[in-house]
Image 1: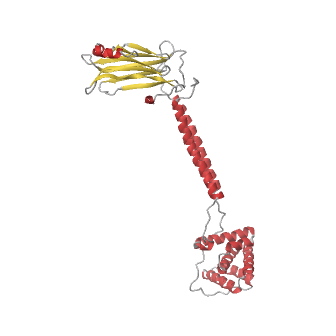
Image 2: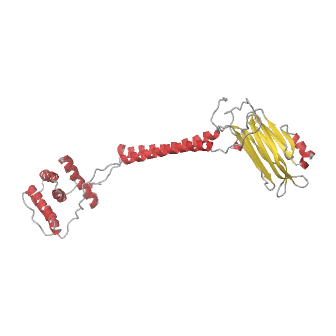
Length: 393
């Protein structure tokens, strides 16, 4: 494997998570766009099996009929209007056209009213409406206007009847049973899918994705800038890349404090720290020895310094156990005592800051230890040639 530098595991994981999240969101947006295009443009839903306009509920029928008239007023396409109205019977169409011509006339829209009159005359000629059918439908509508006291509409519908048949409608008494006439509706506005609304939503989503990515980068940079300041190094030579202090007090039966050693860019170099090595099986445990270790990934070396109580240090069996490991050394615990661990790339300077024994000095009541990790000048750190071991992740 090449010795060239590569991003740390943590930065790769962060980038992967952000990339996957952004990819899922963009995929969702793209899928929504393609789905809408397919559903509305490529293969739109269609009615089948007799779903014609005259099968609609009365309110929707009224809207449909009004839209047909509005469309004709705009484009004067007689044949198109005839096809759209062909499912309705003659009385329904006559009442529709009479009502809409009257509405336009009352509203002062004479041109639109005349257009509706022209459509009525065209349909009468092409579909063969009889004057009797026309007079019956118009008379019923006239009766409704008279019952409502609307003399203006009565006069307007008379003009419509005169132009269509040459006679003024004769008012007939209200029939005992009459099909419900759909309520009048305002001229319908053009329908269709709200593409502008969809485009606005997509732009908002894209903006949110961009904000999430920017927020992630800002958070990463903020974390780097908010790292707690390291104590000022007052020793000789370069400052350590890591300083750590750990404190054990009796009762911490599972004490084990090890930390990873990384460069400023997050590249893994090794591990160090302190943990219990030898203790009696009591409650709480009586700890006689601690393992202070250093793992250097550049040469796959693990060093151990066993900090021992006075009684344990003088125990031949325990000393022999330690001396059988060529990478381990026994250290008698004394207040202020210092010792070092050194590999091909790193050096760790350790110091016992505080120490409390039990009265006969067989185990520790308290042990405070500080470690300073240095990288040797010119050392080959082999960045990118080894990942963090599973147990350290």
